[in-house]
Length: 351
Image 1 (tube, rainbow, N blue to C red):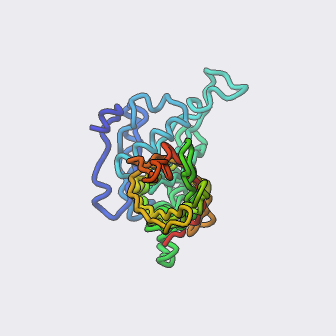
Image 2: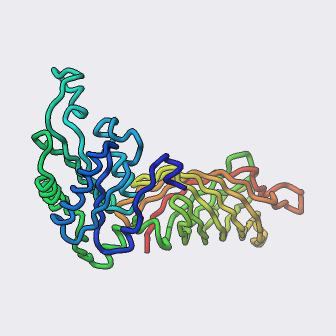
Image 3: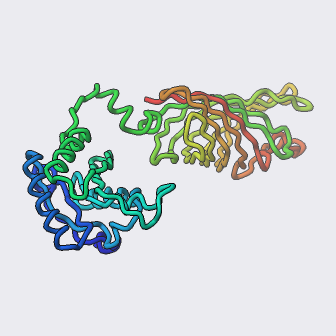
């Protein structure tokens, strides 16, 4: 169906079933004398080329012979790839290929033929065109010329297989190592109020993340972090504490190279242990549990294939918004802000 869709004539099949390479001789002239001559050329080629399956084949398109030489080569390559053959030859008159050459009239006839040879295998192409002097050159001479071109093509024999060390093969035949396995990321982060909040402290944390790419630019991961809430002075006391959190995230990179810029969405469950000292009263401790969704932007700079520097900024909101009030006068000691911004800097190491 693919051949019919491209409008190609039927091609000989079966070359892939044998070990011998297949050479096509394309019909470019419907004249009976030309047909007979091509049949004789197939015989001569069979004698000149050992262990080669030489066949007479239809051209890729009915008007193949009238198309420019460059397009003929392109069509022949496509036909070889589609038909599981390795090479094709065809003859054309010098006048039909050179009629548009500078200084040469359209109707000028040049005696002789032009031999076209195209070989294609495993994505490699070898194409040559040779003039064949004389009005009807010896077919044995043409066959010897084809044998010489086939020898120069180096496409009929399988290339020697040199297996590199397994580690080199894994790195060079796949995507870079940083895009394949699990990666550890360690970073330090700062979170601060973006909106007004009563005595809302900063949060300095150290975090460890384990992440793994699931596609070329998409990755998933999990994080654990812990840190301190630096001491904040109150009118008649102080506030300090510790924090810990665990979360999962997904990230997508828009740039894929040594520099990577992308977006990140993290879902975090956080715990804060708050200690409040007021005047000469004993220090009181409270535990706050919050949940937050944190979108952000991250930038990575890879050095080689094993490690990178990463930086990011984010904005998030803690839910529910909780706070502490003093019982004596119902004054607010701590109130979570509506929004917090965050910044992080760290290192990624690939396994």
